[in-house]
Structure formats: C-alpha cells, structure tokens
Image 1 (tube, one colour):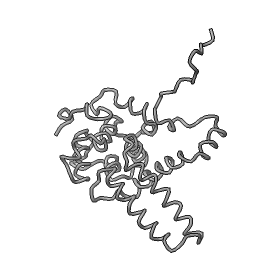
Image 2 (cartoon, rainbow, N blue to C red; image 1 turned 120 degrees about the vertical axis):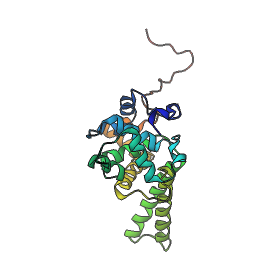
Image 3 (cartoon, rainbow, N blue to C red; image 1 turned 180 degrees about the vertical axis):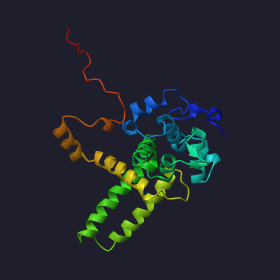
Image 4 (cartoon, helix red, strand yellow; image 1 turned 90 degrees about the vertical axis):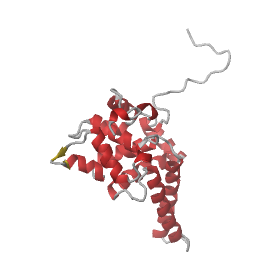
Length: 225
C-alpha cells in the first residue's frame, strides 16, 4: 500500500494535505513542540495514519506493531541498510517523549467514549490510592485499585487500537499526564483558581478551538454607535 492509494477524505486531518503540518500545529498545541530529525510532515502523517479512528489500516493490518512498521514505510521513515534509524525506532517503540505527547493529544481529539472513561477511571484510581496509602480506605480499596488499573489498560488498548499489546511505560506516562489534565479541567475549584491566577483559561482548555462565543444580549439591544 502507498500513500496515494489511501482516501484522505475519510480522516479528521487529510494525511495527503499539503498543509498538514500547519493545520495540526494550529489545532493541537503539542504538535508545535516537535523539532526532530525526521521531517515533521512524515511524523505527522505517521500519527494520522496510525491513530485516526477512520484509518483503514486498523482493519487491514490487525497486528499493532506490524501496522506501525507498515505505516512508517508508507510515510518514508528513514532506514540504514534495511534497519530503522535511531530516530525512527524511538518513535516506533515509544521512547520519544515529544511524539508520545503528540500521539496522546491526537487521540484525545476524537473525544471517544473510551477516552472519557479513562478520565473517570483515573480519577477513581487516584482517589482510592490516596485512601490506601493514608490508611483511610476500607477492605475494598485494593480490589478497586486493581480492577480500575485493569480497566484503564483495557480502554487504552481500545483507544490506541493496539489489540493485545500494552503500550510501554513511556507512552503510558504521556497518556496519564494527558488524562490528569483532562480530569483537573472538570473540577470547578481548579477552573476558578486558574481564572483567578491567570485572568483566563489556558488555550488548550477550549474544546471548540479558536471559536469564541458572542457576547450575550437581549432582543432589542443595539450595539453602541
């Protein structure tokens, strides 16, 4: 399969678009952080083809790591004597922290039920863990912690379409960091504190991108001339 054979119109961001780099950097703050040796367009295409919920590669290539390798070939990740370069391998096995953050932020764009469930389960896990370490929990705390951790792993595999594979710890670190930020957003006291400290909410808080609602007005109100 080659990139030209893929229908880009099915994706949230067309991987064949000439403006892909600018579009993703404008829409997702984490993509602005990339400054690696592999051209940004190739890395961004890789993320789109691997993780867009409409990517046909999920259905055509079942094995997660075979899919990763295939996508890397499609977008042209560099090789030396048939082997991935160090930079390419770091992305493929999940040891590039910046790219991990980009992947997690990209997956979060789809607002899937699995993502929101992970936010909720992370909140529960955090709460029960605090109880357990401070001896305030009950006999069910350890069971809840175990079951919640297993559920998060299950949802993670669904969200990343990784099948039976668990992402390695580096990717989990980026995922949990993103989930924690999302969890904190839904706490009113944190929202109030952020506005009080900064005068406004951070750029990435607005789920509607650059859209800003108009000022409310009553019927019959006129703009001052």
